[in-house]
Amino acid sequence: MAYVKTQEEQDAILKGGLLLGAILEDLGKMVRPGITTLEIDIEAERRIRDVGGIPAFKGYAPSGYTPFPGTICACVDDEIVHGIPSHRVLIEGQIFSIDIGMQYPANSGLGQGGNGFFTDTAITVPVGEINSQAQQLLSVTKKSLDNAIAVATNGTSVADIGRVIERYIEPQGYGIVRDLVGHGVGHEVHEDPAVPNYYESYLEKKILVPGVVIAIEPMITVGDYRTDVLDDGWTIVTDDGSLAAHFEHTIIITAEGEPIIATKRPSEK
Ligand code: MF3
Ligand code: CO
Ligand code: CO
Image (cartoon, rainbow, N blue to C red):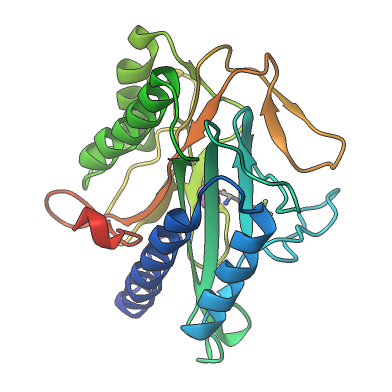
């Protein structure tokens, strides 16, 4: 299977992922009322370059898109993913998601352009004190990711991941975003296989085997699952304006037991 990574590739992904997880945790601690999303973005780029990596999203330009300008995707409240960092000031009571990707190790001669391999991870955090509805959304979204990671074992399929997320989320009345999905990651930010956060019988059931590296990233809404795109061409928001949360980890499938969480944050150890 083409999407199985070699041991050398897995080692670089794990090393880069752990560095990125530590950076993301620190960025999360910067979040407070009064800070701008651009201040967090600037610190993100500084930290990535400091460890010998390259921001993966900066300049990323799928066909039909203008290059993404940020190191992080910065999303407030009803923004789900791909928000552009700006001079917008965060306000008490909001929720804020930080999604970050890194190519590592830069200038190693390995991977795309000799700049190493990609990892991708995200958290959603409170801005000061938040209400219980927002708190619930954050914990449910995080738990759905943890549940999905636990089933991502040798021999299961990407469909099993979607199924476990759907079975946990839908009975609680939340929406699962369908327009965006998780993905293989490593040689590029986005590669095969697609990793949906929902289950449909017609979806491909790619089997997970040791050395497969995927990013699992449930995007969960308080209201309807449908999305819209802002005029900036990038920011994906909930169509009904309801709150959305997003958590993401890059994981490596192992021969036995639970996968390695490449982007594990220090507080998760
Ligand atoms: N981080 C996103 C994902 O999890 C991709 C961001 S691409 C960007 O798949 F260009 F918007 F940054
Ligand atoms: Co991401
Ligand atoms: Co991703």
